[in-house]
Image (cartoon, rainbow, N blue to C red; front, side):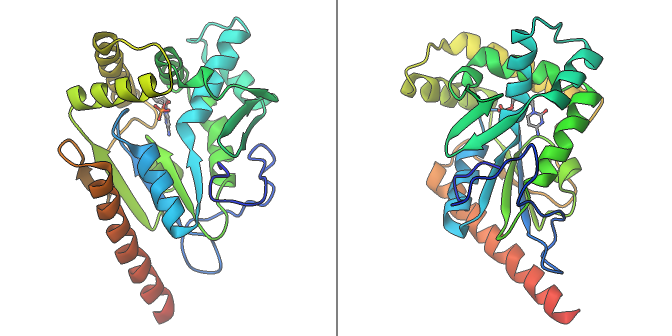
Length: 254
Ligand code: DC
C-alpha cells in the first residue's frame, strides 16, 4: 500500500491497480506477512525486504493510526464502535512515497507519536473498523508482491501469505528502540512513559476479541532482542528466498 517500492501512485481507497489473492499461482501477487508487537522493527524489516525484492509495502498500523486521529479530530468517543466504524468507511487514506495523507492532509508525523499508537490500538478493537480496513489492506496486493506488516497480517488479512514472519523482542528492548526512533525524528519521548504505553498496547492488541495479535499458523518466529537490524533482515531474506523457491516449485508441479 505504501509506494516505497513502487513507481506508480496507488490509491488504496479505490484499490486501483490492486490485485486480490496472495498466493504465487495463477498470476496473483505473493504476500509476505510480518507481524509482532510494537517496537520489534517490523517496519524496518518490511522496508528492507521490499527494497531487496522490489516489492510494495503495506504499513497496516498507519491505517489504524489514521482512523484514531480522524476519530479524535471529529470529536468522537474512541470507544464507540459504530461511530468510529462509520468514520473508517468514509475517510480517505493515501500513501504517497513516505507521506500518509488523511483526507488529503499530510499526517505522517502526527500519527507516529506515542499517543497516536495508543489511539490506534483503541480503535483497532472495533470489528466495524477492522472490516473497513480489511478491504483496503487486501486491495493493496499487487505485482510483483506485497510485504504487509501489522498484527494480524498472517492470521487474518493474508492467511495464504507465502511467508509469515512473527517478530518479537523483550518489552525493555522494544521501549528503548522506540525511544531512539522518536528522538531521531526530533519528537518528544520519555523512556518510562514509552515502556508503560507499550505494555498497555501489547495487552490491548493481544487481549482483544477480534483479530488479536497471535503467532499465525506456520509463522517463522524471529526473536530480535539480541540481533541487529542487519541480522534480522538477513534472516528474513533467507526465509523469503526459501519460501518463494518452494512456492515456485509447487506452482511448477501443478
Ligand atoms: O504497527 P503500529 O504500531 O503502527 O500499530 C498501531 C496500532 O494499530 C497497534 O497497537 C494495534 C493496531 N493495529 C492492528 O490492530 N492491526 C494491525 N494489522 C496493525 C495495527
